[in-house]
Length: 128
Picture (spheres, rainbow, N blue to C red):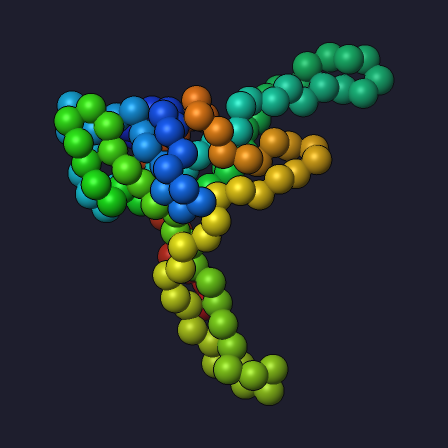
């Protein structure tokens, strides 16, 4: 299996659309999906100050909607479950655009120019 494509956010177009710095020149195609990541944060032992490791978090997911030679446009997406009423157990999942901005005091989850993006090569099936 080949390595996932990587790139960066080059512009924020609106609350749902970003421009990535990769396009046809990197074999990007319409419908590809990417996750936008936080910068890696160090996890430290609070007593010793020793770095135990590092991790990054997912800020948002985007799907390529338009591809140009050296960049592409991508829109947010997600799955939202809805129920008919609290009395019914039937629910349905629909694709819906989700806004990008989601602030956190601990981890900066605001999407910014320069954020890393990594292609999603496999996605888990939605829960039933």
